[in-house]
Each structure stands twice: as structure tokens, then as C-alpha cells.
Image (cartoon, rainbow, N blue to C red; front, side):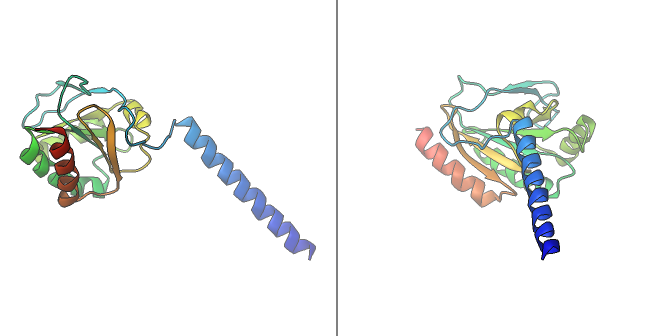
Length: 183
């Protein structure tokens, strides 16, 4: 009986320690959930060369723009990230006069050079650049990849989608945003 109580107590301590470690980690990285209808945090990044952007162009959350924005957090060695990029690009090409799109590459497992090479080889049209210090992901509370955040024309967070997103899902969200936002 004593051995069983000891095992239960040890399991309790291990679970308490692991829970505490996870909590400390989440606080340390500034993780917070994305709150719809909250103001989108300002950011800027330097773009890679794409079909419509020159290398080194500054892309920023522009509070003067009347266009909604789609932000896709990704990295090249993430299979679901890579799988959804052609669909995001296709939707961007369809809506580019009404909606801005930016890909924010996480640096860590992949380098800036890996991201730049991937973007060039993929023929992406929308703006893509590195989150060199991870601050954009922290400000947006990103906890998994890929994550796509939809920003309305007032620069409020409209919706967030964690995990691979399909073209039809993007279109449905954008059609709602464009319909309610633009004449």
C-alpha cells in the first residue's frame, strides 16, 4: 500500500513540475491567444524577392490602408506550411486588388537563405519576409505552424486559423471580409 501511495505522489509531483514548466515557458515567450476584434499589432519586415515585390522592400502593417490583410506564419521545413502556400498564392492573385497578403517566415529550423530560396523557387507573388527575431510571432501569440491571421481594413484581428488552410476556406473568409469592408 505504501508503494502505491508513493507512486501516486511521485506521479503528482512529475505532473505538477511539467505543468509548471509549460506555464513558465508560455509566459517567457509572451504567448497569448489571438483575440478577434483586438487591434492588430504593428510590424514591419524586409521582403524577399517575389513576382510583385523587390528584395528588401519594407512591408508593414499600414494603418492608412483600406485593404484587409492576410498574414501567414510559416517556415520552409514545415510540410503543411509548404503545402498551403500555392493555395494562398492563388487566392492572393485573385484578390490582390482588394486584399494584401504577407508571409512571415519563422527563423530557427530554417535560415533566411532557406526562406529566400524557397520563395524564389516557388514563384510566389505576395510579400514574404523573415521574422528575424521572432517578435512578430510573439506579438501575434503564434503557438503553432502554419497559422493564418485575417486582419480587417480597420486593422483589427478578424479571425485566426491554426493549421493548414485550404483555398476554399481562405476564399470564404476573404469574401466575408471584402463584402463587408469594400463597396
